[in-house]
Image (cartoon, rainbow, N blue to C red; front, side, top):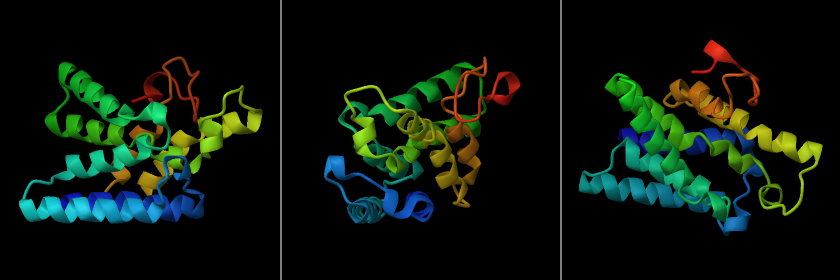
Length: 178
């Protein structure tokens, strides 16, 4: 049940926040296909008693990574790296799980940016670069719209921030960066 709620919350938040701007056309995917597939994965997994929140969010992350061929597997790798780092730093088990979940969903906002921008073979214009920079903000906004996923929103939205303040979208620095 929790897995289905998490997957549904992600999709609902994404669709409410960016609606018709979801553009997975470069991967040949329609938003309704994502919803149908996640529902099928959720129902099959629950029926087998095997699906927890990790696999549901991994499915969402995999769909986001299909946005561009060069990002295939990216979210899972970021999640695995984050999980290992948090464990090595002695984070509490619940914090490790939350960080892993936020890492899986950190690029959810990429669906709000046109494939033409992601796959452009030349320098981006100022407007295009701003849209790319806002994908972290879009991730945060999508997650914040869900009661279930809101606790992950800030962490996911800060994935391009840097300790020296040179990151984006906030330009946060030092202790402001989790």
